[in-house]
Image 1 (cartoon, rainbow, N blue to C red):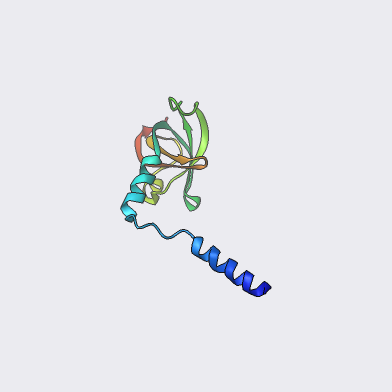
Image 2 (cartoon, rainbow, N blue to C red):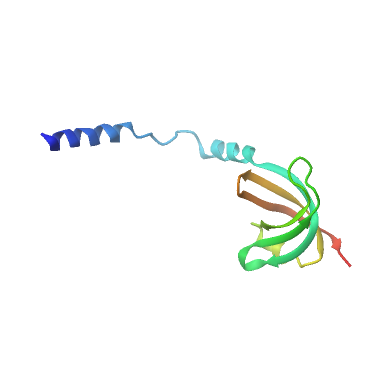
Length: 114
């Protein structure tokens, strides 16, 4: 009797599992991209860690988001990272998807610091 109750409980739980969404993948990607907040960043490259895809930047205040400071930023674009060196002045787009989920994109050199 105990085995029958356990089997029925397992079947009931399996029937209650959520089914995969029938919505197209493009809609979910669109919702994710809308959740990403974007900020303009201006600063000077302090260190480039290509193997870790990290750029340390001494940046100006990001109005409405962060005070001026020096910090590490993940960079997803390897080509952009490879073109940078300490002392490069840059502008970039800081993408923030959530707590601890941020990265720099659209990185552009503004010249070099003397």
